Each structure stands twice: as C-alpha cells, then as structure tokens.
Length: 61
Image (cartoon, rainbow, N blue to C red):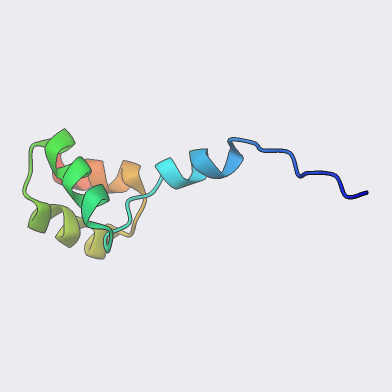
C-alpha cells in the first residue's frame, strides 16, 4: 500500500520569494503593490533577477 506524500508549504515560501517576469499576473501584482508600471517591473526583473526583495529594492518600494 502506497502512502501519500505530505503536503508542506515549503515550496510556496520559495515561490513567493521570486517574481516570475513571464507571468503576467505576477507582474501585475508587483506593479500594483509597488505603484509602478508593469513594464518597469519586467525591466527590474531583467536587471536584478527574479528575487522579489531585489526587484522591490530596485523599484524603490
């Protein structure tokens, strides 16, 4: 009998720590949160990588 794998929040925390520049909903969320344009969020992701902390710092949030 196979047992089910435990569901943990570990992957979610790692996912929240990054901004997926190719995912429009994530770009829109970050743009709204930082009060910047979606284009500036994408530009920041290209410049500093997808770390949410670094993107927000780059955008001045």
